[in-house]
Image (cartoon, rainbow, N blue to C red; front, side, top):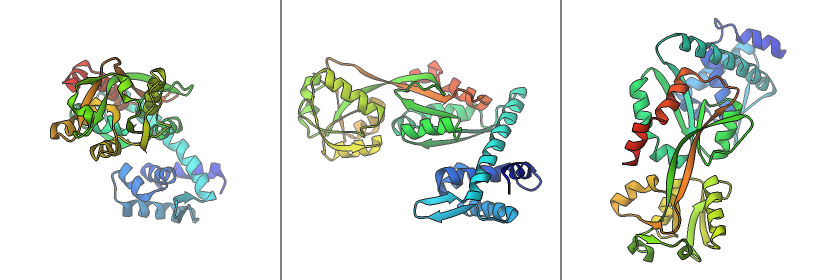
Length: 315
């Protein structure tokens, strides 16, 4: 079936609901029925049923399942491209209708790096949901490179990343800055100190982010400026694994202060400040330049940048 025929056919909402097309696109993009179910707040069996409905309607197989996950067939690729166009146009219509009304509603998809999402987003999200209860917010934790990819592809409305990079297709809105500190287990000699010079880190056993992550690159640049060399014994893609590695004595690390408050209260970790350096990690809200933000997305940015919430988060 030609792409234009599928496009016209799928636009007939009496036969196929827009939600079904979105579920189909989510399965193609994630390669996972369970991930698509989570993103759409439905069960995995409901996802399967909706996809069976599509295959029955078009009388062809749209997805292949394998070890690597679900993948679109040639016919599925045609439907995916057409559905993406329909979903984008539907989103534009929905945005215009929301702007003409007084109630902020609809859906909002946000992707965020682990350290910010787990430890800094909650008070902002709580306030947002209190003010705009009719918005269906989906938050996912992701690697920075995937967040940029998803923003550019239009799979998410907003992304929140550390050290936001300049990109011709992306707009960056400043969010806040994180203070980075040295953390060590209570058994480490540094644990008895409040401050140390950065040069004291030379030769230390170290746990850090993976090399392609911006926070790791910034820390490496700082080490280079001070001729500091550390011995990496662990490289991870998320803050939780880094903290656990430090707790068990695998090494020391440099992490956002906000991300270790719980461990500090329990006494599982100790924080040591640098006496000759203040490391601040900039955070940014990113979205696609050509994307017309919905009222739900605009209000979310407004809440993230509210001074009273920023001050409350610092306390």
